[in-house]
Image (cartoon, rainbow, N blue to C red; front, side, top):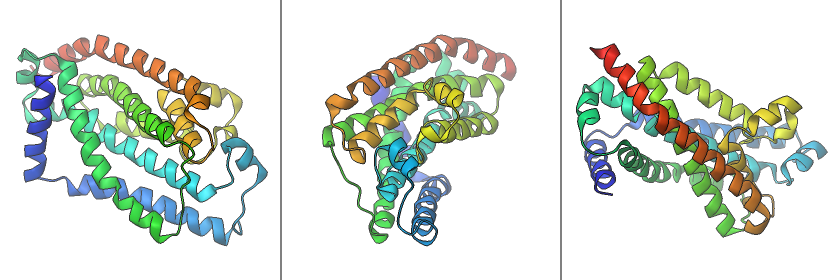
Length: 267
């Protein structure tokens, strides 16, 4: 798509000249600290063992590997939302949203192009976590490489779908911090990134199923630390893609109303 390619190129040129070091460090560092503190707690408090409840809920006793995968995936989710969901409000703050809205290019290719660049740049940044994980001697098993790839792609699709609607909410409300931080907290607590959802009350576990990131993390954890293959995880993968499609459809349907509200607020 020409609009998507042009967006990737424009974002690359902008980032190359003014790389957002504070965003990168501020997002990658918490994952490194989470893994490091988990390592200390596992050995100093847990004595190198996990309770039966963790093994039953997560499908593995490899706590540090589970934590490394979840912490990395969560901070990648945060980083991707910081890029993708804030694309439109960044245009609004820079005074270019009006030009974007009257441009003949559809909105979806623009958002896809922006997200494609965000994924590539975020993956490059999060490779630094491999240094931390390796220095701590944490080994992450890979039960199904294809399943892990499918889980990673499903997580990207889930976050993109959530970001479209969240981006519309941001420009309509004219603020980003409260809405994005609320989403970060909800996803981090409910979606099983760093601890099994079985620890949550039953009603909260049901609520977690409403987010596509929950089933995406089931696929990612299951294919890495859970010992499952893609065929075993296919139902959860289908659930993730179906929910992501619903979120994306709702986001695209409501985006014109959010854009209209943003223009009304500006003028």
